[in-house]
Picture 1 (cartoon, rainbow, N blue to C red):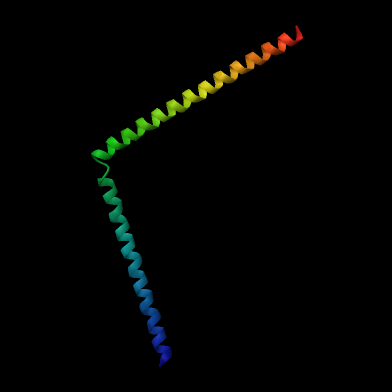
Picture 2: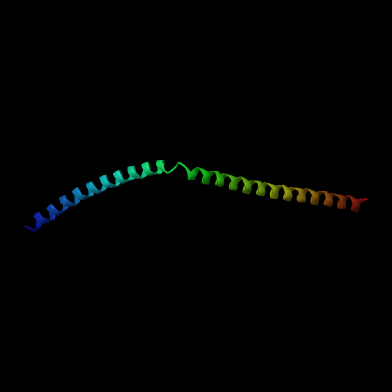
Length: 88
């Protein structure tokens, strides 16, 4: 008789698992619909602000890189001038 009870428990557990997966799929579909609806209004303004911030950060980094390149080129010219003066 104990064997029959354990077999009955497994069949009940399988049915509840099938229901759980169905419920999670339904909730994921609902979550996707809510994300589509929230893309209106203010998030556009925020995304534009983020784009502006990224553009400013990129411009700053490019200017810093150009300044480094300029300083390196000046250093190279100075070294070459000193080397020429040593041999003359």
